[in-house]
Image 1 (cartoon, rainbow, N blue to C red):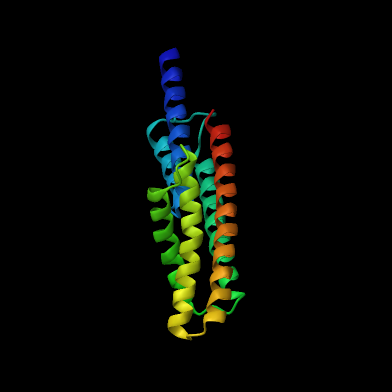
Image 2: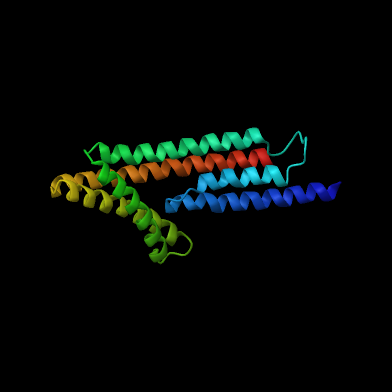
Length: 183
């Protein structure tokens, strides 16, 4: 049955490449880690032989899900803590999230003129700038105090960067785990 084994490894390589592309969506404030979980679940359903002692299992998919949840909690906590530490209102935190997504997408599209890395760096810088702008606008709208709004904006910016870094690290752990369990 070498054909079945070859097909399994070809699908496994496709899974890992797709998972890496999904992981890169985290740079754009999109749910890349959850897409990795979905890809792994689809792989188990469609590719892993029934009763296989090796390969990707539902327990491994559960582990990936737990890691993805941990990454989301880490990202949310860091972003919210950064803004809340400066006394942000709920409005400022909500607009910081919206600003992060908009800034990430605009930064990726506008990207720096650096091959391959330009859109990624642009998305990170744009997301951080968007978090700052959203938090600043939210605080100005709520309280109208520029000095306080700037400090809330900086808190949101730093929190967003730390949260994204944490989520990316969790995603890397997920990729390594996926590779170990699949191959």
